[in-house]
Length: 213
Length: 72
Image (cartoon, rainbow over all chains, first blue to last red; front, top):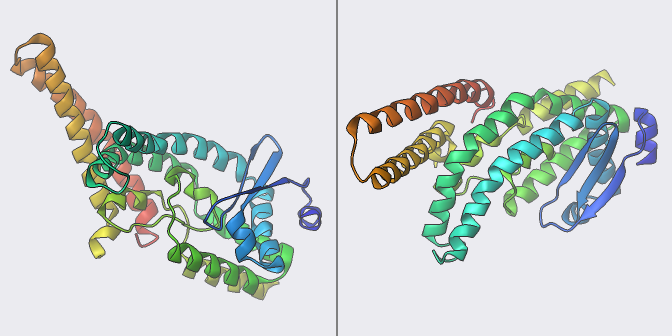
């Protein structure tokens, strides 16, 4: 992390580990102090060089100045989207059934219908998908290895596809790729929160970037 | 299922959710004054729906620009 920060000419961010069943890495912070959070699953999934590449992406976000806006968007969009979780818990406590029963899921679906469009609007208006391309290119510049980043992202995508775990959709723009899954009609509002470019366009851009290097 | 990949369907369901809230507001109003005042209910519906449709048109334009370019 120190080496990457020196190369990027930024102060070394603090690093935190959290326990979560999805391989997530993200950066938060405003006013010059940034923290990188790495999930336990990401530590298990990636080897040393892959982890370095993924951290280089986060350093790229810090160097390109994306993190303060991402953090503020996550605060507002995440708070909006959390209302649907509160509705679900409210339905559970009021005796509508278990988490997987139709009634609580329908209540969450209705409340998501109310909060998802404004929350996704905030995320879509303020987070440009081109920032992911720029962070990818910065990671390649710092590590000098575009293939490693493509492989790490594909591995991450594979793991996320195999193990779909719910996250607050208002935070989805902070992760290296889109981790939101639409498995049935109840989840259809998650489509609105995709702020990431497709894997295909990312790998094409990375190939071009590696040719320049 | 191709239907699940349609963000427009998501907006349609959102519109249904907002309509359910309007229905709740009308029910509350009717119970509050213990009468169905058609003129008042029409006014509430008009103002509420005008606001919701305006916001949803803005959302539709933004999502069409942002999501369709990514193939959603």
